Length: 120
Image (cartoon, rainbow, N blue to C red; front, side):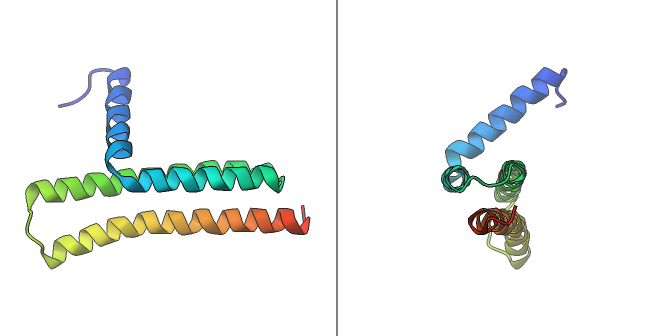
């Protein structure tokens, strides 16, 4: 069923995001980590581009987590059995979240180290 208007699409997207936030504990962890790094950026007075980086990587992690959640729910709806093919699909989707998370941590450590060393 297609949404009739752009506003309907946005409402559906917000419902989906809210569902993921309520049901996936990782969102709480990501929010805590985001807040922690944001505070560290303020404390160490990182370069303004670090804030752009934190926004980009945080939205990437949240997006990947939403896709991972939807893939897991779709597969569970279709087949509850544990099969090697299903495990691979779920693991690869979780891997996408991990890749974004590694990028997030690496970029934040980079900005904080630069601020501590006073390079920029």
